[in-house]
Amino acid sequence: MAADTKVAVTSVLKVEKLTKHFGQVTALNAIDFEVAEGEILAVVGESGSGKSTLARTILRLLDASSGRILYRGKDLLGLTAAEMRATRRHIQMIFQDPYASLHPRRTVFELVSEPWRVHSSVAPRREWPQRVAALLEQVGLPQAYASLYPARLSGGERQRVAIARALALRPDLLILDEPVSALDVSIQAQVIKLLMTLQQEIGFTSIFISHDLALVRLIADKVIVMNRGRIVEQGPTQAIFANPRDDYTRLLLASSPELVGETATKEQEA
Ligand SMILES: Nc1ncnc2c1ncn2[C@@H]1O[C@H](COP(=O)(O)OP(=O)(O)O)[C@@H](O)[C@H]1O
Ligand SMILES: [Mg+2]
Image (cartoon, rainbow, N blue to C red; front, side):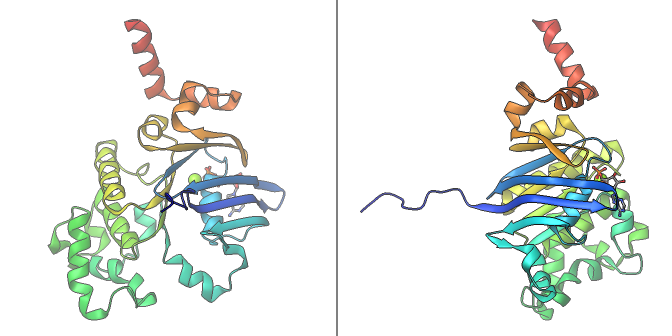
C-alpha cells in the first residue's frame, strides 16, 4: 500500500486581496494570508493599522469592498445571509472589551447558552445545564456564577464568560481581537494561560490580534505585520523576530519595551 496519499496542509482560512474602504480611508488594502489547521496566526501593528477591521470583515460584521475570504475553500463573501449564519457557528470571535460584548441583562447561564438558541443542533435544551456547567469549569469559573449578571463579575471573569460563550459552539476558528488588553495587567497572564490550555485541549485554529510582541513571540506560529491597511511583512514567528526585513517591523520591535529589555539583557550577557 502506498504511503499517505494526502499530506497537504489544509488551509482553514485563505484571504485573497481583501480590501475595505471607509469612504476615503483604505482600512484594508489587498490583504493576502492563509491560516493552516491548528495554527496560531498573530496579527500585529500599531493602533489604526486595520487589525480590527480585518477581523470584522472576515466575520462579515463589516462588508468587504473586494477580495475573497475562503473558509475551508468556500468564499464567505458569496454566501447568502442564511448560509453565513450557519457558518458563523464555526468561526467565533472574542472581543477586546468584555464590558461591551456581554449583554448586561443576561445571566451567565443565558449568555453562555444563547448561541444554542440559534444553533440548536449543537446542544438540545435538556443538556444546557450540564453543558454550561462543563464550560464554566473549563474556563475556571465557579458553578454559582451561572445565575449572576455581568455587573457582578471582574473584567477577567467577564472575559472568561466570553470565552465560554465562544467555545459553546465548538468553533473551528477562533478570532481574538486583543483579548486581554482591556484587563488589569495582573489578570492578563491568567487569561492568556487559559486560552493556551484550551487551544491545546480543543485544537482550534486561531487568529490572535495583539500589540504585545513579547506575547506574540511566545505563542504564535506565524505573524502578519500590518501598517496602514497593508501587510508589510509575514512569516514564521522565529523568522520575523530574528530577522525582520521590513523597516516598519524593525520599528515596531524596537518600540516594544519587553523585547528591548530582553535584547539589552542578552547584550550584557554576551
Ligand atoms: N466604522 C468605521 N468607520 C470609519 N472608519 C473606520 C471604522 N472602523 C475603522 N475605521 C478606520 O479604519 C482604520 C483601521 O482601524 P482599525 O481596524 O480599528 O485598526 P486597529 O484595530 O489596528 O487599531 C483606521 O483609520 C480607522 O479610523
Ligand atoms: Mg483594534
